[in-house]
Length: 176
Image 1 (cartoon, rainbow, N blue to C red):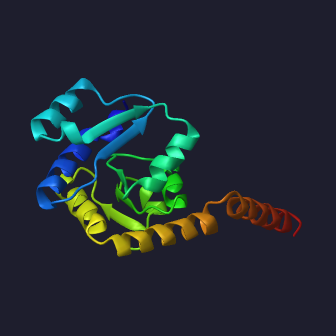
Image 2 (image 1 turned 45 degrees about the vertical axis):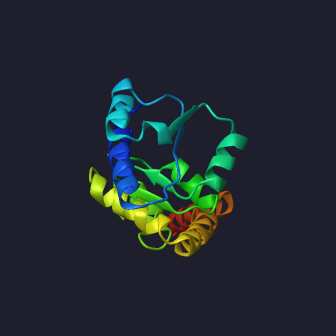
């Protein structure tokens, strides 16, 4: 488990969310390695252990299913690059709630395709999660906008065209 992912923050926010709302979907984690034992101890202490599952090394088909059936996708990182998983969630039409920790700020449009909150702020993360879960119609609209954003700016076609445009500019400039 990469400590920069800050699963403890996610658990704190999820516990707060469960205290704020009556109906909260289970928390499903998926990845290459399970959260550390200390995180599971914390989940138990917060009273959320029964609502949290971890799926290790899921296939692409399973991962696609998880994205498509999620109420939202949450990133609790202290630091994150571009965030391929964020783009995958957005491409699957799901709203994203993330800490503003670098890369997510370039992909997630706060209020448009999801929500961005300060890194390390469990209350803000829980509030943003509640905001999205509490309004399914708005969440679906965010998800649709996210999918369009990925198609327009991050698809192979879009990024390929950006490279071609850059090369053309460089070649045109070098000939002058």
